[in-house]
Length: 248
Image (cartoon, rainbow, N blue to C red; front, side, top):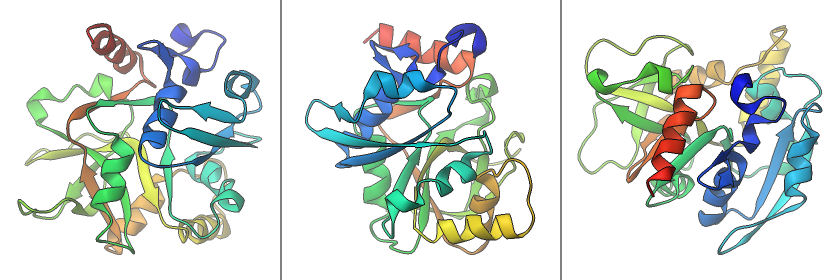
């Protein structure tokens, strides 16, 4: 994405007249979330300069707090930095280079569908037919296997999380993990601490955490409806999002 963002932060790239980060905050605000902690790199001061401490959405104001991740040590490391802010409450993680364009907020769909599973963690899913799947538009997003589903289920039991960057399953329906778009319970922080205790060095990714939750039967997926999720962290995904908004 460097050729598109140039020297700026890709989170501030504009789609449909708004930055990617503004789109993400707007979805959270429309879903009833009033406070957000933004974990940022020290090399991107322009992000905080662009937003300040409040985000004004059409129907609500979101309070912003800021935490600096000194080194790029992965999503799980970034999540751990939000623990003082989160406390013992469930929380949504949204990487802002992902864009949802739809009739209903993606965050609201995730929260509502998991209301019947108070102990479950959840991820947003995008359903694909293999023939229509354009891997160049989804970057390194991961795929998951789900248990058999009935017509009335609002969320699906995830039985396996495939390694990031792996090819989709050969048979059956393909479910793409929504580029991380997740609802976590506060016990996630204990899981991250255990990863560190195992002597893991370097980047701490979120995929091992999701794989662990799936093995324990505590991970559910919500298939997002009424719109499309774009991975704007890769050029083809960003170009597709711009093309979609230009026609609205």
